[in-house]
Image (cartoon, rainbow, N blue to C red; front, side):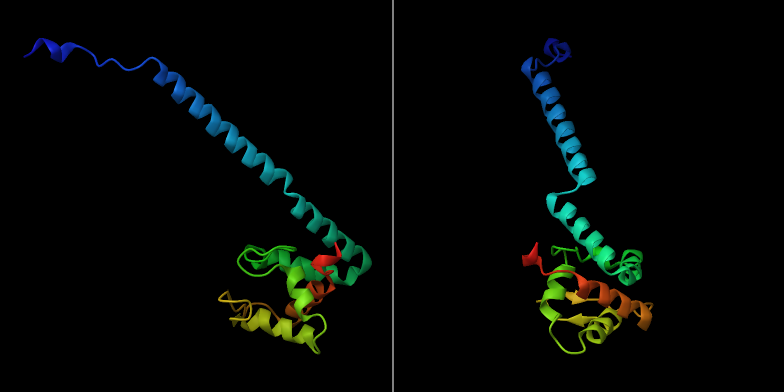
Length: 149
C-alpha cells in the first residue's frame, strides 16, 4: 500500500459556501413560486372579479359555473386566458353573435371537436347532460369580451 492512499483529498474551502448559497436560492425561489400560486396573478384576480360580476348580474347562471367547476373544464380552459384550449372569454367573444350559439356550444361540450381552435382537441364529455351543457354554455356566453375589461 502506498503512503499517499491515506491522504484525504483537499477540496476548496469556498465550495461549502457555494452549496449553502445555492440551496438558499432554491428555497427562496420555491417560496416565491408558492406565494405567487397562493395569491394568484393579476389576471387570476381580474377573472375572479368578472366571475363574481356575472353571478351578481345573472344569478341563474351560478349553476352553470358550478357545473364547470365540478367537471374537468378548468384543466384546459382559463376564464380569461388560454391554457390548452381557449379562455372562456375568448370563446364567448368568438361565438356570441352567432345564431343558436348556446345549443352549438352545448353540443361541442358533449361531443367534443378538433381543429376549431388550431390543432387543439376538445374531448367529448358524454357524462354531461343536455341541461348541464346548456347551463355551462349560458355561463360562458354571459362573460364579457376580454377587451371590455
